[in-house]
Image (tube, rainbow, N blue to C red):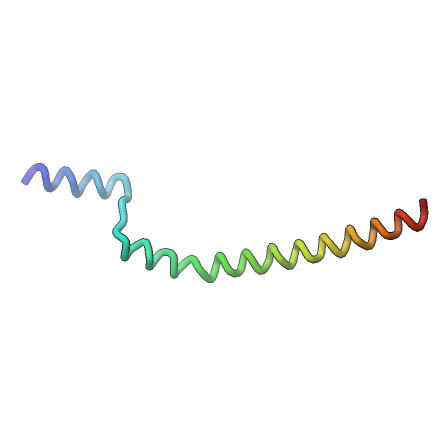
Length: 62
Protein backbone atom coordinates (compact mmCIF):
# COMPACT_ATOMS: atom_id res chain seq x y z
CA UNK A 1 0.00 0.00 0.00
CA UNK A 2 2.69 2.46 0.98
CA UNK A 3 4.73 1.71 -2.13
CA UNK A 4 1.77 2.37 -4.45
CA UNK A 5 0.91 5.66 -2.74
CA UNK A 6 4.54 6.73 -2.88
CA UNK A 7 4.65 5.94 -6.60
CA UNK A 8 1.48 7.94 -7.31
CA UNK A 9 2.74 10.88 -5.24
CA UNK A 10 6.09 10.80 -7.03
CA UNK A 11 4.46 10.70 -10.46
CA UNK A 12 2.19 13.60 -9.53
CA UNK A 13 5.09 15.59 -8.11
CA UNK A 14 7.17 15.26 -11.28
CA UNK A 15 4.07 15.79 -13.43
CA UNK A 16 4.56 12.56 -15.36
CA UNK A 17 1.83 12.22 -17.96
CA UNK A 18 0.49 9.32 -19.92
CA UNK A 19 0.77 9.09 -23.69
CA UNK A 20 -2.93 9.90 -24.01
CA UNK A 21 -2.57 13.04 -21.90
CA UNK A 22 0.41 14.12 -23.99
CA UNK A 23 -1.53 13.59 -27.23
CA UNK A 24 -4.41 15.70 -25.90
CA UNK A 25 -2.02 18.48 -24.86
CA UNK A 26 -0.36 18.45 -28.30
CA UNK A 27 -3.76 18.70 -29.99
CA UNK A 28 -4.62 21.66 -27.77
CA UNK A 29 -1.35 23.42 -28.64
CA UNK A 30 -1.52 22.87 -32.42
CA UNK A 31 -3.57 26.00 -33.22
CA UNK A 32 -1.16 28.10 -31.17
CA UNK A 33 1.87 26.56 -32.89
CA UNK A 34 0.37 27.08 -36.36
CA UNK A 35 -0.59 30.67 -35.51
CA UNK A 36 2.94 31.46 -34.32
CA UNK A 37 4.44 29.82 -37.40
CA UNK A 38 2.22 31.89 -39.70
CA UNK A 39 3.07 35.09 -37.84
CA UNK A 40 6.79 34.27 -38.00
CA UNK A 41 6.59 33.60 -41.75
CA UNK A 42 4.72 36.85 -42.34
CA UNK A 43 7.24 38.81 -40.26
CA UNK A 44 10.13 37.23 -42.18
CA UNK A 45 8.55 38.15 -45.52
CA UNK A 46 8.11 41.75 -44.40
CA UNK A 47 11.71 41.91 -43.20
CA UNK A 48 12.97 40.45 -46.47
CA UNK A 49 11.00 43.04 -48.46
CA UNK A 50 12.22 45.85 -46.22
CA UNK A 51 15.89 44.88 -46.52
CA UNK A 52 15.57 44.16 -50.24
CA UNK A 53 14.17 47.66 -50.80
CA UNK A 54 16.64 49.39 -48.50
CA UNK A 55 19.56 47.50 -49.94
CA UNK A 56 18.44 48.51 -53.44
CA UNK A 57 18.21 52.17 -52.44
CA UNK A 58 21.63 52.06 -50.81
CA UNK A 59 23.26 50.66 -53.92
CA UNK A 60 21.55 53.30 -56.10
CA UNK A 61 22.53 56.24 -53.91
CA UNK A 62 26.11 55.16 -53.15
